[in-house]
Amino acid sequence: MFNFENLDVYHKARDFRTKLFALVSSKKSLDRWILDQLKRSAISVILNIAEGTGKTSKADKRNFFTIARASVYELVAISDILCDDRIISPEEKTGLYADLETISKMLLGLINSLK
Image 1 (cartoon, rainbow, N blue to C red):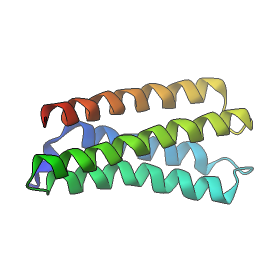
Image 2 (cartoon, helix red, strand yellow):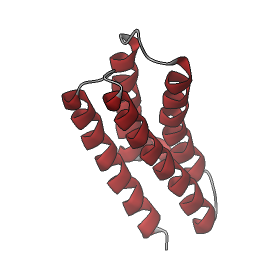
Image 3 (cartoon, one colour):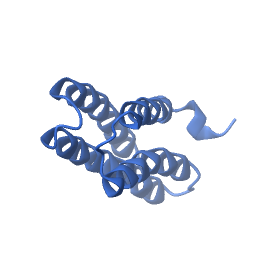
């Protein structure tokens, strides 16, 4: 087993990606550029967590976890846009936001543990 597979935040990010993709797959009016960016951001969170655990220095680990957290912030902004454009409902946005807030806090905990 790889180290990242033991991290709760890795599993939470994977679950979020699955939930997000299921939600947006039914949205016909979703702009292709936004959909592409949304997918890349969700995948970026997962991949940067995995890559960060493979680094040997604390500074490198922090950097990748910080990039993962920045992708979470990007997903928050994308969910705002989707709600503004009435592609997702305010309730759907609230659900996404809660998951993203949890993932962000978990990543911040990892980042702070490496100082």
